[in-house]
Length: 86
Image (cartoon, rainbow, N blue to C red; front, top):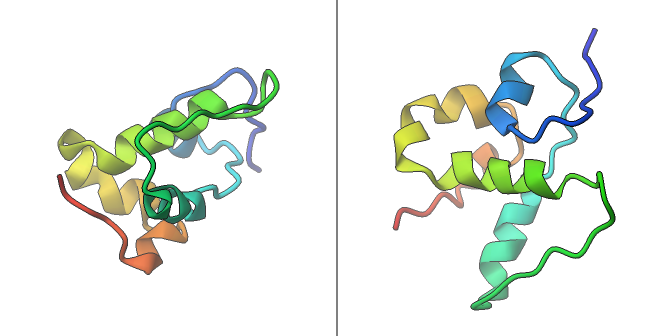
């Protein structure tokens, strides 16, 4: 049984410790297609902003590239082929 995320803002920890994670990875493609210089996330408290930023960190971080399949293998973003290298 999956645990409910409360107060956890680390994507890797949430995935490894079997927390319930609602897949927000399709938004990565939308963010990339915005072609904006600055992005602002306006959401109420406890609405997952830090967890989503942690998701982006692990998605783009070259140091986490060897863990990509483990962290994103079952998520929609891994099926979209939108991974870009800087």
